[in-house]
Image (cartoon, rainbow, N blue to C red; front, side, top):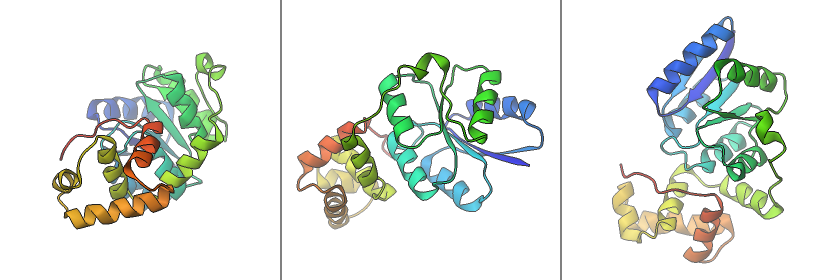
Length: 216
């Protein structure tokens, strides 16, 4: 039996993709998650997953952080990013940070199935129109990815809010924690990222193309 995990915050897309894959793969069991937290929960509970189909923009994922964190914690699990964006800079970073494939959401069910089959066989898969455009990321970006992988999900949320320019008391309010806890997180973030102030931390966050996150 094959076991796939679809991690996407849109129920209709998960349902459609699950139906399409069930028609293409015999004896398939599909697990679903709607945010980064539930994705980690499924990954922890299901040890025999064959592939993770990951949406970069689902809640809690922090764009590239989800990929970086999961790749660090589950190095042997093939990950295919399934995205509505085909920005070549994002695709290049996704592949450099450990994805085995990049599948546009606009792909047909036949193309998605073909991509997954290639990845399950150990191949890297990209749409033909993107193969020649993908570029290597520089050593600095790879070093940043390694540093970011050491951050906990909560620390990464704090980093996102620093990137948005929030004060400590505002971050504490958004995360329902004390200012002292926020300060402790910031100290840990600086240490793990090898920086000494907020400006340097924000520069690193910018390199990961962070976007504002919604309040709880």
